Image (cartoon, rainbow, N blue to C red):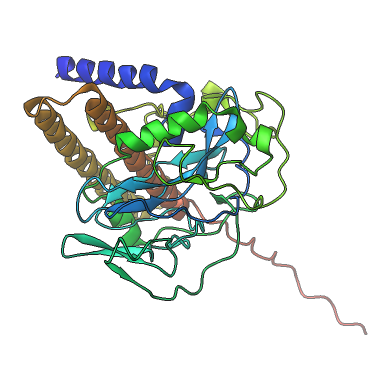
Amino acid sequence: MHTTVAIRSLLFSFALLVFSHGAFAQIGVGISVNFGPPALPVYEQPICPDDGYLWTPGYWAYDDDNGYYWVPGTWVEAPQVGFLWTPGYWGWGGSAFLFHEGYWGPEVGFYGGINYGFGYGGVGYEGGRWEGGHFSYNTYVNHVDITIIHNTYNTRVTNVSETHVSYNGGAGGVEARPTSQQESYANQHHVGPVAAQTQHVQAARSNPELRASANQGKPPVAATARPGDFKTGVVATKQAGGEYKAPPANAARGNDARPANEARPSTENRPENTTEARPNTVSHASELQPHKFTPPNSGNAATDKKYQQQQDNLAAKQAQDHQKLQQQQDKEHQQAAQKNYNDAQKQQMEQRHAQQTQQVEQKHATQQKQMEQRQAPRQTAPKPENRPPAEKPH
C-alpha cells in the first residue's frame, strides 16, 4: 500500500514539474487568488474546422508571475463519441477565488452559471447534440460551414443572460448554485482536458499579449479555430467585457492568496481532523482520512443522542464516498498499467484524480458545515422579568 501511494505521489510531483505552478492553476489544485478575473471579452466564434470538433469557450486562467491571462476559446475534437465539454469556472471559496477544472463527460454539468456564449448560456449546453454517433451542430449559436458539415439544425436559444461576469459568488459574481442533478453529472464517468487543450493553455500562458495586465481585459486573440494555433483562423476581441484595472504585481501568490482584509488564522484555532483542516494538495482518495465531528453539546441528552446519530450517519456516508472513489481510481491505475500509458496519459489521469479528490472533500466540507449550523444551539429570547403590578393611584 505504501509503495502504491509513493508511486502516485511521484507521478503527481512529475505532473507538477511538467506543467509548472502557473500552468497548474487552471486545474484548481491548491491554487487560489484573492481577486477575481476580468470580465469575459466580447468576440465572435471562428468557423468549425471539421466534423466532430466541439466548442470549448475561452476563459481567464491565472499565473503567479504574470497574473490573469486569457485562454482563447477553440474547437477541440471530443475524446470519444457521446462526450460533451463542461467548461471550468472561477468561484468564490469563502476566502479566495478557486478555479474548478472543466471536464469531458456524457452530460454538461455545473459551470458556475457563467454565460460563456455559443450555446453555454449559464446552464447546460444548447450548441449541439450527439445523434447516431455524429455530433449535430445548432447553427443558431455555432459558426459552421453547412456545405461541408451537413449534420446541423437551427433552434433558437432564448433566456440567455447578457452579463459578462466571469466568476461565481463573491462581490459582483454570478449567483448560481448547482442542482442535485448537476452535481450527479460531476460524479459520472468523465475525463479531464485532452492533451491538445493542455498544450493550448501552455501556449496562451507563454504569450505576453494575452495577459490581462497587458491587454486590460481585451486580448488580441480571443478565439482560435484549432487548439494551439494562434495564427490560422484567429479571431480578435471586439471589445472588453468591462473595465479592468490590473492589481499590483504579486498581489496574490497561489496558495498564500487571501483577501487583504482577512487575517490569517493562527494554528491554535484551526480545527483538528476535519475537512477544513486538511491540506488541499491531496491527490488521491487513498490519502484521505476519516472525517471527525465535534461532539454535540446542546444541553439536552435526548437531543445530543439524535445529533450524534446524524453525525455518525454522515460520517459513514462520507467514508463510503472515499471508498468508492478510491476503488474507481485504483481501477484506473490498473488499467493504465495494463495499457502501458505514456507520460502524458499518466499526467492527465493524476490531474483528474486530484480534481475528483478535491471535489469530494469540498462537498464533504459543505455537508459538515451545514450539519454544524443545523445542530448549533439556538439563541432564545430572554424571558421578561416578573415584576409586581403597579399600584393604582388613590
